[in-house]
Structures are given as structure tokens and as C-alpha cells.
Length: 165
Image 1: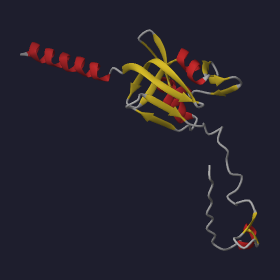
Image 2: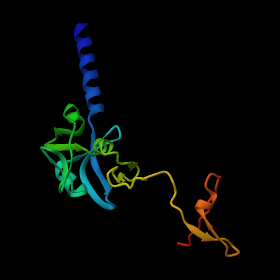
Image 3: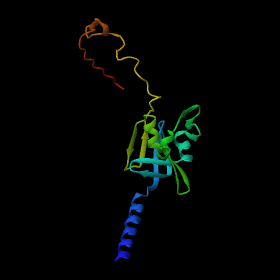
Image 4: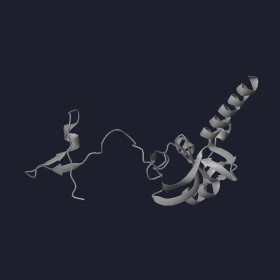
């Protein structure tokens, strides 16, 4: 009776281990608007793990003692969270690119059907508004009379724009 129980527990542990093993496959990563085919990759619960060699090839970032660096730009990996970003297994050193994107506030879109990951601009690359006030400009109306945005200060304004391109 005890041996059957031990066998059942062992089977359960083995099945759980098999289910938690990440699937290794291939993916396309679009980073800085450049598409790179990567193999192998690991997709663990929506987290994209790539080898450190592919990290440099796909993103031009590489791991250094200072953190994830590209040229003179370095993002330190938080010491208490190192396991969230790096791991070893299957003969590779892995880097969690989606965790890194979260660290640098970079939007990520994943198309599971095409195994494609798109990484947008990092927070340091996006322009920020210096103020929430629109710059003043002057445009003619349909009759040719000039109007400036500052003429409507304190009033609600609806701007409608159109471009042919």
C-alpha cells in the first residue's frame, strides 16, 4: 500500500516537472524595427527567454557586470531579482527579454500564432511632453481669416486634422 502511494507521488512529481519545463522553439524578434529569427527560445508563461548570444544579435545589448549594455548605455539588473533575468539550462545561458522590457518600460506585443515578438521604444527613447500646454499656432479658416490657438485660451476647442498621406 505504501509503495503504491510512493509510486503515485513520484508519478505526480514527474508529471509536474514535465509540465513546467519550458518549451524550446524558435521565434522572430522585432527590435528597433529589425526582425531577427532566433532559435532556440524559451516561452515560459508569456516570458521570452533567449540565449545571451542571441540577445546581442537581436538587440545589440549584451550582459556585462554593469548590467545589460549597448555601447555606453547600461541598465543595471537588480541584484535581488537576478534570477528573474538570467538562468542556465540546456547548455545555454538564458536572458529574459520580456522581464528586461518591463524593467526599461518598453512595450511588448506577442503574436503567438506567428511566434513573433515586437518590442517598442524604451522609456528613455520616447519623447516626453515638456508641458501639457499645446504650442500656439495660427491657421486660416475657410474664408481666409487667421485664427491663433491663443485666441481661444480658457475656452474648449475641438481641433480636427486631416492628412492625405
